[in-house]
Length: 305
Image (cartoon, one colour):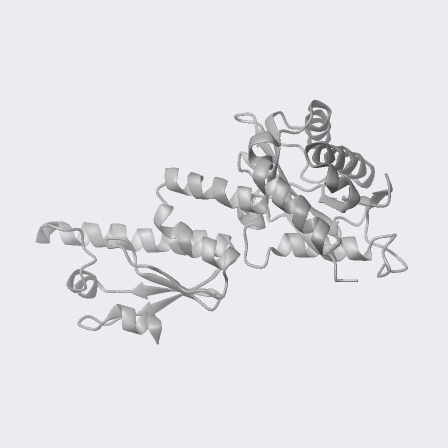
């Protein structure tokens, strides 16, 4: 038998304006209840999903915490799922989980117990106040079935993936925060949504580096579109060209037609843009380094070295 594979996704909770959830994780029993409701919702959308194990982390995360190279939250969820009761790898003392067997498959909700959250499913307080909160889930099973169900979810989940009313109410009550919309997304849907949000936020030039790190980590991609910062993604890291004002101007990164008196202020804005890009990349778990590029040299050659 081939090794099991997983289809990765999230429950996306859009909070009402000004709302702040009172809790950032559910306890074991409500986590299991929400997992059963979510598994039911997905099976209604794609009946084949009922033949796969379903695991849910009943914990609120920011999109940047899910959209990281290697999908670390989903990897942890998969590790816990593989060790939960009913698995051949189950330990003598399994991680906190609520478990149900609606059929041949398992439905597992991971929540908090008196010792806190299992494994590495702990949200970063620095990202705890965004309007969009995510609960990672996965469907796990035989490779051919996962591929079939995954393809169906990719085709229809973004358009038809609103959660049922009782699921949305259970989440609103469990986290004690007013919600406006609750829907299911695959991680590819989530990436597409974030790409649009970054475009609206003026960060569209940066997205190809993040997308490559997520979906094609072994590839190389450049941000080389003056007056934006010069950056190269390769080997899992991003290198950004660190220029002084003469090198910045001499290498053609200053805005076209700018007057000499405007150069210092424009260079300050360029440096702020570099710091902004570096902070966004770091939030996505992508390592960033700044490479000094002396005036008169080729900054692209420095980033290739």
